Image (cartoon, rainbow, N blue to C red):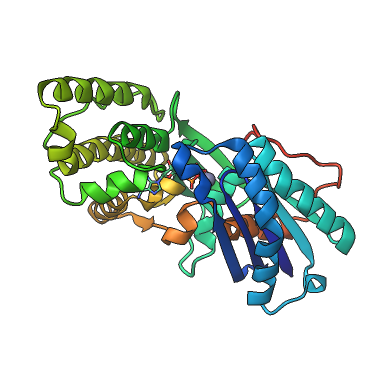
Length: 332
Ligand code: KG4
Ligand code: ZN
């Protein structure tokens, strides 16, 4: 079973080919244009997808040494994401499925982030917990089977990726700023400054409070010393990052305890964060958990995870009609 998968939900145009659950080729075209605007500009994202999608698919086929006629199913990200961006991938996938007369498989982007763990050789066994942390979402997912999962905790306001990116913007770092905070934090003291990590009830998160307190903290410090950021950047990044990572791991511990689960995974763009990765690893050793940390290329948006999800949907013959639509607010 050879599946071609397309991902175009935000600012990465990506294609992947999977054969019987094994990745054969995978390509991501990152859109650099957004950096100068300090955030993803939806219209530019759609235009860049339009420009990239055909060459990305052609190159992915070439790398797998396959022809379009070898493809037996087409998968695409249906949502959630930016409407204009999703429309490019959806329309392209529908046209290809129609032309090739092969089944069409619609994939939920957030479930795909979780299933990215099945691409790698060491796969989790169900049930397991996955902390999905991205620019738009923060969720703890209880995975019963690859096609049956449930959100048991989520953010009530901002996503943790947003908390990283907004703070980075205030510090004058490039967009997306999460990885720059991570980068500068490597040389800083995580205990230099304290930020309030107000706990939410249950397994839910809230990041709007810490984001605002970071803004007030900076304003106050800069007023006293205009060079404050310049001089203390590593300590600021390390302390703020530590507060966010602590908030995430606190809820992961709680979820694992409540659900008696000892297999813990992380997914999504923020799972590339080095402090989160190393502290989850340490926590796993301390708690006797088996932890699953994806390769960097499977953390951020990619079509390999879309292909992986499609593989499981194919096994259940869960196909979509050609009148299906992009769904920017697709529910879980
Ligand atoms: O999953 P993703 O690629 O796209 C969405 O679906 O949102 O996640 C993007 C998010 C951005 O907020 C970005 O700043 C963050 O992931 N990110 C990081 C790191 N690398 C990417 N955040 C913290 N540390 C990193 N190393
Ligand atoms: Zn994503």
